Amino acid sequence: MNTRLLNSDLIINDKGNIVGRYSKIDLFYVQPAYLVIRESDFTQLASSITNPIETSAGRIPLGIVFYLINILFKDI
Image (cartoon, rainbow, N blue to C red; front, side):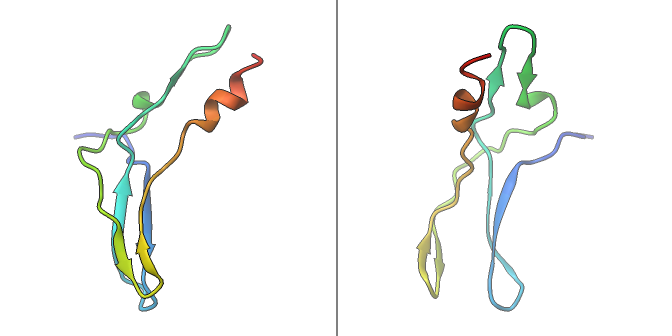
């Protein structure tokens, strides 16, 4: 049994139904001077990219950004 989590975002319509889901496919690994953060230790890697979801507001692409981590740790 896999006990790691999926890092996912959801699109929920006005009726409360899940109409789209994206799970992260690019996990980060950061090793500043005294700390190691390896997202794969606790997060399961998804296997595919999700197409944009059609909604009444238009097509909505799904994604999870982790590149901010480089900015947060650049001075450590």
